[in-house]
Structure formats: C-alpha cells, structure tokens
Amino acid sequence: MRNGVTSTPAATPEDATRHFAAEFSFETDCWDTHEALESEDPGFVLLDVRSPKLFEQGHIPGATNLPHGKIVPAKLTSFPEGILFVTYCAGPHCNGAARGALRLAQLGRPVKIMAGGVTGWIAEGFDLVTGA
Image 1 (cartoon, rainbow, N blue to C red):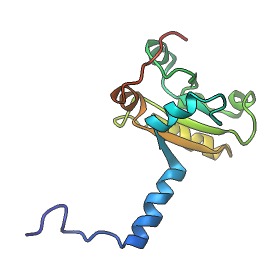
Image 2 (image 1 turned 135 degrees about the vertical axis):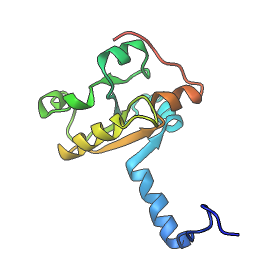
Image 3 (image 1 turned 30 degrees about the vertical axis):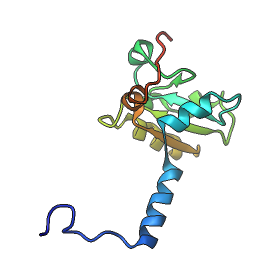
Image 4 (image 1 turned 120 degrees about the vertical axis):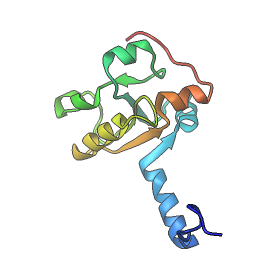
C-alpha cells in the first residue's frame, strides 16, 4: 500500500550520503554547541539573532546578541576575519537564524545555524542565562 512516506522513492545511498554530509556544513546542533562552549576555545562566535528584549529574558551562556536585521559590516569589525559564526533564534518555528546566517554569508563570513535554537537548547536540558 502506498502512502505519503513510500509514494516517493528514497534517494540512492550515494545521493543520500552527499545530501546528509552537506547538512553538517550548514548546521550544528545544541549538544555539539554546548560541548564546544565548555572548552577553552570553541572556535566560533555564537550569535543570538533575536531582539535585545528576548535576549535579556534568556539566552545561551556565552552568546552575543546581534539581531539579524542589525548584521552590517560595522557591527562585525570586532570579530576576527574568518571566524566561524553560529546563529540561533527561538527555535524551529523561527527563521531568524537563517536570516542572520544569510546576511553573514552575504558579508563573506563563514556561518552555520544551531538547529533547534532556544527551544532545542532547553529540550536538551541546558540552562539559559538572563540579563544583557
């Protein structure tokens, strides 16, 4: 019996390998981000691209607040050229992380999205901090 899952054939294993491997070039997850932030040098800048108000209400420890609409060259001068940025927003229901990542990429900066955002972070059992 055909259904919504089986009506379209799966990709070949070779195509699936290329597709899923490429995803890691574009995103990371909350667990890997948390683990990296626990190290002395995580190797990236974590950007909370939500509003300052939401950032103050609760954000990931170590994150810098830079709303996606404010990502302009002048705001990036304090960050080393070539440093990886990891953007996050509220969660899967929000496209702010993608908007921020797009803007950073357009400005020639390496970037990934942290899948799950704040919602995923909390679901993993990690704490948020409050204040600016």
